[in-house]
Length: 100
Image (cartoon, rainbow, N blue to C red; front, side, top):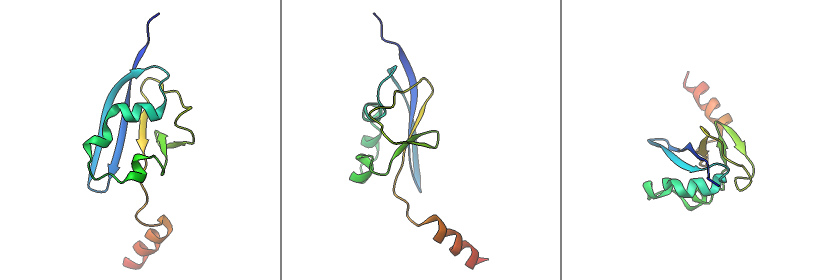
């Protein structure tokens, strides 16, 4: 029996730096395992531990996945590792309005 290999992407973004990497993984691998396999955290030495622990969530193409251990990856999926917000979006809108 052969294992199907698929290509997925893993994305991690910070305000001044972003990284997107393509990874070949077995079909059905969990999101968490694929993130670890990608080595994306090794590329950013300063990534906070809470981001490494996926405490701020992960998603596929902008849709949050509540349980990354249970989600089975499909060919072409782009995993997005979310980071904490630096400012509440409502406050950011208020600040932009004050500048106008």
